[in-house]
Image 1 (cartoon, rainbow, N blue to C red):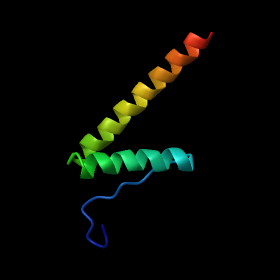
Image 2: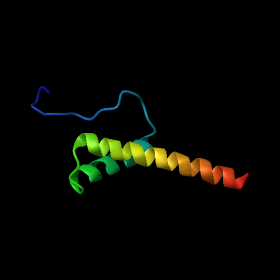
Image 3: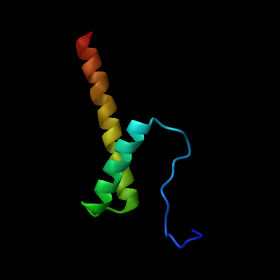
Image 4: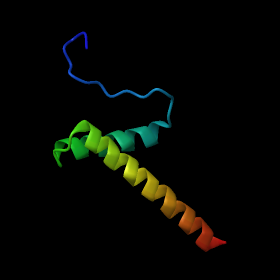
Length: 64
């Protein structure tokens, strides 16, 4: 961008601070420790989010 950064990660909407902090921690861990591209790291976060939602629904249904 203006300062020469090849890419920038931003959100287009407001989000819960704790959830955003956790998501960005996982995202950067995927990029830095697992050496994933930004797109692959984002996809992995998305897959984790879907899995977490399915698990939450499953746990909720088990309680009923």
